[in-house]
Amino acid sequence: MRMNADGVTDGPVRRILFVEDDAIVLEPLTRLLRKKGFSVDTACNGHTGLVKVRANPVYDLIITDVVMPRMDGINFLSKIGEKRTAVLVYSAVVDISSVESLLAEKGVPLTNLVALAKPCSTEKFFDAITSLLDGRSVRSQTFPTQSAVSSITSCSHSSE
Image (tube, rainbow, N blue to C red; front, top):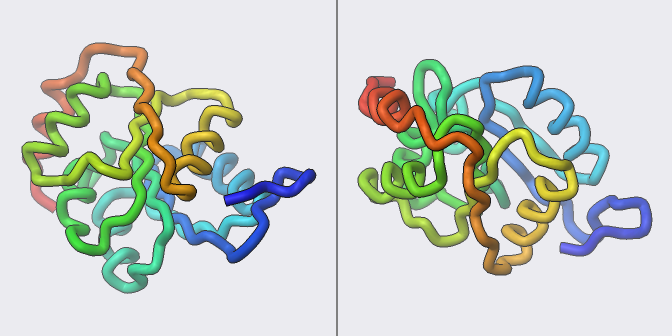
């Protein structure tokens, strides 16, 4: 994926599903993504995201939070199965090894998946997106807090 001099994507429009329950995070980043030329669908939790993926499985990238009401990001990613595409896990709650362990327990492949701590700079956010969409190897960024593993574990065992 290339960006032109204005920072807008060149080539075909890339489709993104952004699953985030916090409007303070979702709305400005969605506006930025659209301004950069992406087509963005949003969902306020994993359940709504799952409905959107099942109805329209043509997303180039899924961005998801981890802790959300109704269905968390771990369960969401485990349920999309063969419709899975490149994934950016964008969360401030747990450390990267916990996220990877929980995803592995649910059978979610860790390939073409990056975890990024929020908040982060828009530059780092877009670098991760560009690398994932280009199929380049990206290193997950360690989350700032090393706690809340138990809260995410309890969330990941909740029902839809």
